[in-house]
Image 1 (cartoon, rainbow, N blue to C red):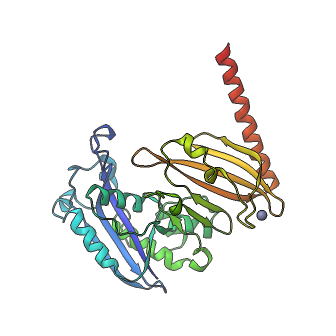
Image 2: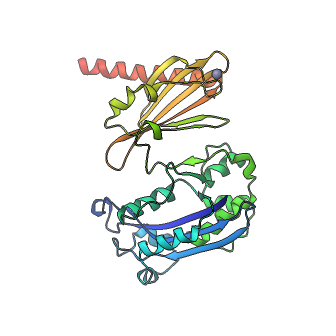
Image 3: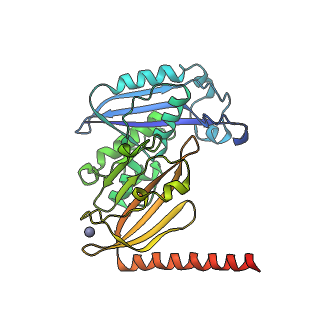
Length: 319
Ligand SMILES: [Zn+2]
């Protein structure tokens, strides 16, 4: 299995969000990739600028970070030509995409959709988020560091240009070369650009530290939150259906929490994150994690404080 390390640079509407094309908020103008084999040896590189079609000036923030003159982009081939070349270059050998953070594959597919390019990536699309793996290996698993931080942390040569697709890709590839992938290889991420469209496509992933479920798409939040598959909690260690100590309660920011207990394995913290699809529907990502007694207490406190707030609000409304 090869690794295809990918990095993109994109532009956004220079005259502000209210004037953007909603089908293409972020227009890719640079694609860099490095191919590594299983031993993490470099097999080849891909580096192309892309001529923009939608935004003909750079957004001020993009202008600040990009190292290439905008005139160079205007001379470059268009997206369709580059994306075809890119997938040819990826080759027939099985590969897994690797990116720094979860954004690049989302934007890549959004751009493919915009150009009605038939998405050749597998569904579900598993990939390695190297930013996440870096945190799992060297920090607490939750931190998300800038690429430059990781480069410095691992004492890598800084002879490449940051914020240039091929430069960032080379750095990310070097970080992979430094990592003990054996320790983190199970921590694949799954891309949410094309969420499961039916029950058969729903995704279940079990890791050492937690389990994840991605629901199919629903028309409304209400329908989703009353669906048994979405709300049932099972212990991911023994498979037992669990009794809830605290039923799902809203915790703000489209998050819901619960607390269950497995007689064998202890407390499980449940978290449901509600996500919106590009066409205004909903799906959810549920994670279950075995937690300590004190973590369970934190969830209890959280629920109590939210309940108290709601009571206050109701009281105010009735006054
Ligand atoms: Zn259990």
